[in-house]
Length: 410
Image (cartoon, rainbow, N blue to C red; front, side, top):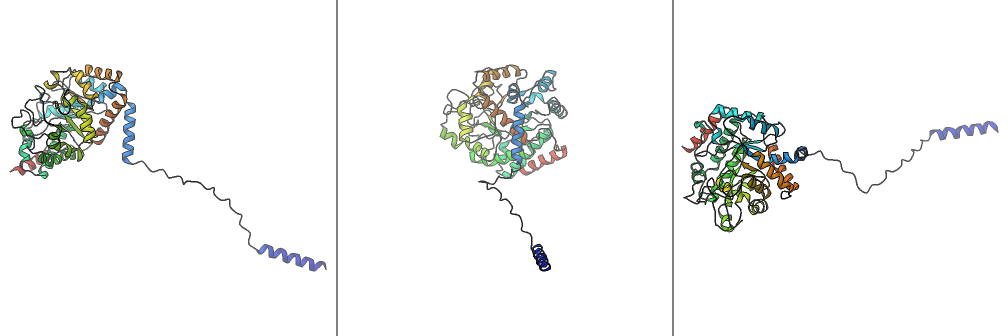
């Protein structure tokens, strides 16, 4: 019996060995109520906003105030005092007027010196008034464009685009990154002493249709266009360089005429607006528009939905200086809605800066509002090539662009 038992046992073991092994049961994954999303890569816009926040965080309160000042300088060369100011403070912008300019070589040397004096991480806007016609700062007469009214009479948006490109190229050629143009005032008053042929037309719809491509042409050359003079200087009988003009229209009348071009430009992406020194009693019976919360905050920000940079016209003008001190006016402008206070008076920085710092201490300008203003300024600076890393047009290229415009008129 033993051999049979052994044989049966061996067969049994062989049969068992030939069966496949049972796979061990795996432990089921625990159920989660929600799948964790994969983090998206930050977009370019997100990255840009983070960069702005980092820049803002690096600035002291005093430096934030610096960013809101658009200052003038003295003379035709950069003085030691102005060089020191630009070197030691985060100034937001520098403007040059006719008295700062004598020749091609001098102007290029001056704009280069202004840039060299600045910290590479806190570059300033560098702006001038180049409209063509009688408001032209470029020293070479061959680059002068006809007045806006002459261009406007062609009623051709394509021509306006080319004119804007020429103005932008002109600005970069001489070292500027900002042009206080286009003029969007409507020339509705024939006895207006300041606008006249600086306006594109006496019809608001024409100014809107032609002003927008002019603005876009300047921008296409990587130069900041500044639309002006909000809410509209076209129906005044007083030059604001001399005194304070008053426009007695109702708000409805302003909406039908003066505001039409500005609304069109804002809807088309305007990034910077210059506010005029004009009293509009229907909007604010007490303050000129450049110092008015109803004009800058309620009308421009809230009603017209403008989210760019608001800059005052030069506060060193009779419309302001006959009623306010420069430091007081600069403080009021920022407290009431402006993002940048502009003043061409060299040497005024210390008093203006101190007045605004006092406003922050007094809480008439909140820190949250201060940060919002600086953020808008930094955001606009980030959009443009302030460091001149792109190609500057040659004289030949600029000459050709100007010729394109003038030939179009013939």
